[in-house]
Amino acid sequence: QKEVEQNSGPLSVPEGAIASLNCTYSDRGSQSFFWYRQYSGKSPELIMSIYSNGDKEDGRFTAQLNKASQYVSLLIRDSQPSDSATYLCAVRFSGTYKYIFGTGTRLKVLA
Amino acid sequence: NAGVTQTPKFRILKIGQSMTLQCTQDMNHNYMYWYRQDPGMGLKLIYYSVGAGITDKGEVPNGYNVSRSTTEDFPLRLELAAPSQTSVYFCASSSLPGQGIVEQYFGPGTRLTVT
Image 1 (cartoon, rainbow over the protein chains, first blue to last red):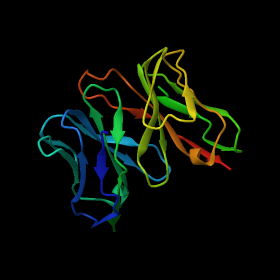
Image 2 (image 1 turned 45 degrees about the horizontal axis):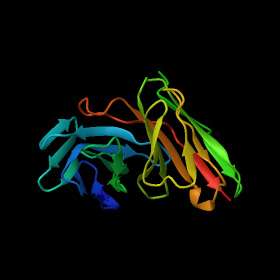
Image 3 (image 1 turned 120 degrees about the vertical axis):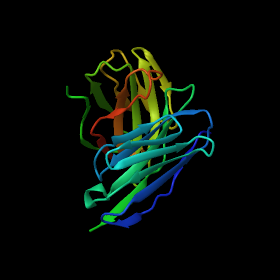
């Protein structure tokens, strides 16, 4: 069974620090990787996507993918209290139209 | 563009009742998905569809049915509601996978309680 795993947290960081969120997946044939942010009571919102090994930066967010080690991470620089949310990792595995989600990591940014 | 819309926003069902959760998208997406999210958990795929008339099971399909008669609509039917179906239900859509990275767009969710 294809799996996506995340540490549930909470991960607490002070305002202005770098928050590092990690996700591992079970299938080497995975194709696309996504990070969603979900505020309490709201729907998931896509913040980053990546499919090639290496880093992808967008503003304060950097996604890092290492297919050999089967992990994908999200770095949030200059963390703000408004970044406090649950971050969901999702993987689309090769040969399917399905996206498998991790259980999410709760991030708390302390003012 | 309204994106993905879902109705109702909230619903309370008694055990054994049935209901349909509605989902509509106006982005002409071929792919549509139903997920459920239990408290403190990630999203579990219930059913998905790759186009009108084509549906397939996800990870947790038992107790649910779907149909896809049009590109825009993808209703989820609950028959004989059980307390285990208490959850938040999200509908999502995406364009054709395989064309680069394809993002899923989510609806606002339906919060369902079965008592």
